[in-house]
Image 1: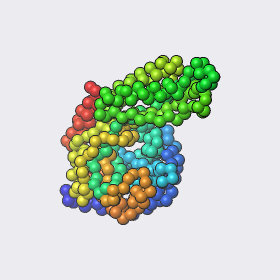
Image 2: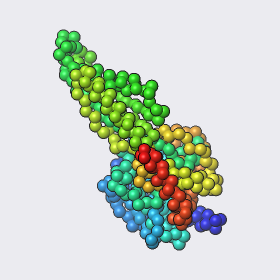
Image 3: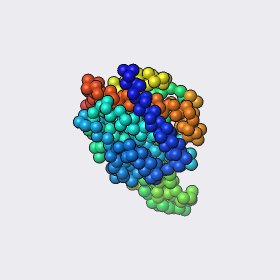
Image 4: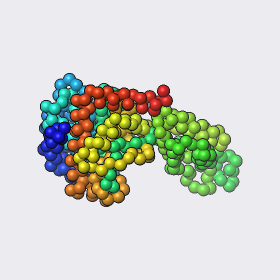
Length: 395
């Protein structure tokens, strides 16, 4: 085992400088979701030069790519690479670093081709900060035959986490339509769309005391009228709600629609619900993979803490409904910084973060070799995934 670890570290170190330069370059030239043309091209070019077969663009996305290394018959592993930045802040979520880490992991696996048989993919996934491309890719079946899809996400605080547990999410744009009238001279001729929108939110609030702990509903009024002396004939609300599974999301969806229709009926208005985003799925957790990556990360000197309760949402969740998946959180700084900040962006460029990138890549490579080479472990991973998926689906 020690000999294998040495080979892994040598393979990662052989490409580490190139990966660090890539991370720095992405940080210096941030690109917004769906506009990551140069970022994706640079990643694809590095992988193609190393011997991967690259499809670019990919899966209907102009800034997506798929780099494949076919090393004979066997299992398949995908490394997921992110590279979109945030408006004004740049790479305040660390995509420059952990996207480069996925590329580094793929390069190291190619270097270790004598150690396994199977297929390695590095898949460039745009727009994680918006309507994540992994959602559409999952819907297309791209991950259906994968034995594992994996990535790490940059994180602060000095402790890594084996997996990122997330909630399912649905976003609606809710529009109410009424009739305008003068608010003083003839209010009886009006039908207030704003009143319907407010009553909709009131009905949601009335349901909150019966929510299960996993349900979260948040909304903002985007348009509630133009002047106070005019009964508004239009109201626009953007609403997001989250649950612990896609099955529970559908039940919450019924409740949202009942409240919307009831509010419209009570105020003699009509209502229209449109999707504001594609649905983000919750995470189908995988205990064997989480236990193994914890042991591996600790063996490379990374400190790992327990996985906290599900909070936010990620398009990796959609991937996890199609194959065993893992999104470990990699601490790149001991400072307790917040994500989506300039301070965290700057932390991705420090030596501490570069060392974390190396250890993170070594961990992903070792986990991937375990999946590729250990049939009994691979079966345990698959069995655990099928069981958890069945529970999530309510079967």
